[in-house]
Length: 400
Image (tube, rainbow, N blue to C red; front, side):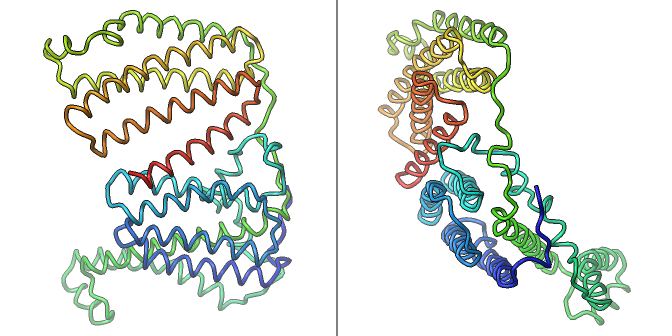
């Protein structure tokens, strides 16, 4: 992997990145930081998308058009965050908007590649450049080869770095000694109060957002010129199928015993259970926890087996499909119990999300069956699951 130097970078692209970072900081301070929710947070998401598109246009980036698939759930999540005030919507909407936006921005500017040729949707560079972009941008941010800024610039940079430390130190010392506080207040127009600490915290968060935006912007406009590997993390499955067949047999056996023991619960008359002392709430929660346990087994064991072996052996595929089928039985029971709960007490937002989660798991199992039937590579299954889950929950957020 090669790195283009700061001095060789196009001047207009540098100005565009700086302008975009400053705009993002002002937008974050005015829209997202106050409360970090609601209309302001939604509008900040739209602003981020507009800035990414402007950088792509300014840098003449050849776009991967299929990356816009991830822009749709990001916009839907921003709309839901702006329109609805529930805690679940604010949390899930923010997470969904951030995740789909990062996928959109990364693959939009990645070296041109067809959707079907993408080996893995989340390579290590996606996390390094998305979560911690400074790891790969030390050169353009910390030093500038072939550019002589002189002594004044270096002194100014040192002052900027020291200011937050000085502010905190003076505030702590002033709170410890009234005489020193009086001297500092005469020298400094800002009073060292709780409000000043809050103001300093907001400025520091703004500074971190600005540095992150600069680093992210540099990587965005340089990603194609550096020509990173298109499939850096993809390796052909090489694990021993017998090892995973053994694990799948054991997991299937335990889940089968569980279903046998729960036959009366899964298919019996719930009226008798209610007469025996269980409430509708207890009945629904019991089914939901069964769902969580079974889906965790399915997701963990089957996906790891798929990744490690490619499920090329017929018995491995049969065992994974058996695990999925048994999980569908538990899902059916959980859905039945949740429906009884809704009939008795009405539909609430929490019950709506519980039902949506059940539907999502059923859809994921369906995609797994399709992948097994058509012998999809693991990376292709992950792409289908990612697009499907993002699209489903963006729709759920708008409808809730």
